[in-house]
Image 1 (cartoon, one colour):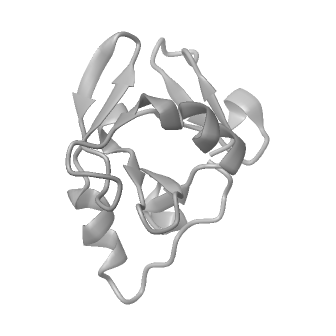
Image 2 (cartoon, one colour):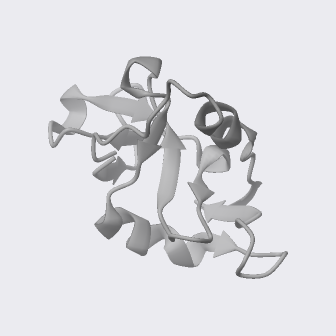
Length: 111
């Protein structure tokens, strides 16, 4: 995921990917962000045809990383994410669900 737009044409926040601007986008779900404490990589759900797990582009991940809260220490995934003045409890179950499947690899679509 390469860019985070405040709103897409439907009025919702969106991740744009594939360097195609508004032509290729997914709804942004701030409560579904996952940051790996081992690598610092940030993931967001993407379409199943891309593997269901999208890697957020490093530049964007660095920009949004101060918005994460680590209630259980730096060695555990963050528990909260602040977006537009609201603190979201993070739901990481989607990430572990798809990463545990043998046939799924992380999508490398720069979302």
